[in-house]
Amino acid sequence: MTEQGIDKASSFEAARARLLALAYRMLGSRAEAEDVVQDVWLKWHLADTQAVQTPAAWLTTITTRAAIDRLRHAQRERASQATGWLPEPWLDEVAPSAEELALRAADMSYGVMLLLEHLKPDERAAFVLHEAFDCDYAEIASILERTPAACRQIVHRAKARLRRAGAPLERPDPAVHGRIVERLRVALEAQDRAGLLRLFSDAPEVMSDAPLRVSPNAERDAPRNAPLSAPLNLPLGAPVPAPASEPLHSGEPATAGWVDTVAALALQANNAEVVSMEGAVCIALLCEGDVVGVIDVLTDGATDASAKIVALRIVTRTERLRAANRMLGREAVRQLLARIQQRSGFSTAVSRDFPVDVYA
Image (cartoon, rainbow, N blue to C red):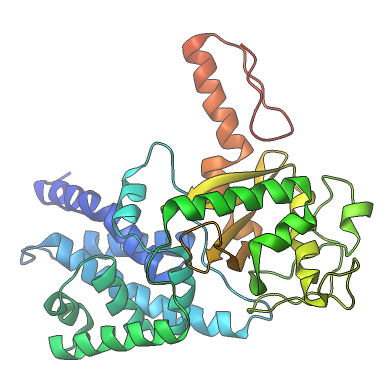
């Protein structure tokens, strides 16, 4: 390899984690972000970089423009889908990788990620670069080929659109948020319907990346590990409170039917675990050790015990959970236990449930 080639490789590797985090923030998909970064590497590898004074700036510019192009195409596809679209969950690693650290440095809540879909690609790029990557308007102007004043206006307009869409631009108190997510997990595992109702506002939004296919009588009829495939007349994918046709128990409101949907979804998994996603806790649903759903919670912002859940975002598509399973799934746990066994000589085994059983 030539000296120039070595410089190219080292320069790219130094920026790779940041580029991946930027592309993910733009696209909401780790797989698409990895594709963009791979394309950028090919362009960097083939480019005449003798005149490039700041490789990181060059790579950031190419990554942003490639992500904008891909986002324009992706938004057309997402708009044509019969079901909704949610960003891919990016669960935080216990021992964070370079990509994980870059993502944390570009901290942006899952709720904001979702509402970035309201922005045009150029608005999204300017907002992400300014808010998540601390780029000044001169840098953004160079990337987007606009004037700094125009970029300032784009970011201002993007913030206004996000506020109108209800974006939670400020993160909730972590302790309060963590307690309410843990209470939700406990209520789901206990199938405590009354407890669930107490956690939610009167008309919460329930969003999913696919129609939730759970039997209306799943609590009584479904085997515990049944696949999420029995029909349910609940077309999720847009913010909809899912009303029941009639109260299921005397004295309960007719609009509480969505509770049974969420409870039945959790029932058909083995475990509900609290995990960290982009710096905030959420719930991972696991079936036989693999992640089959991720539930993100949005609260009303109250900072005491009166806090209520105002929205749930539920991701269940297999392709959207691949990254989560690579980090948290059964095979990842099996590999971890194998390494522990090699180092310690202890006997380890993975049970059908999650977490794993470790016999020493």
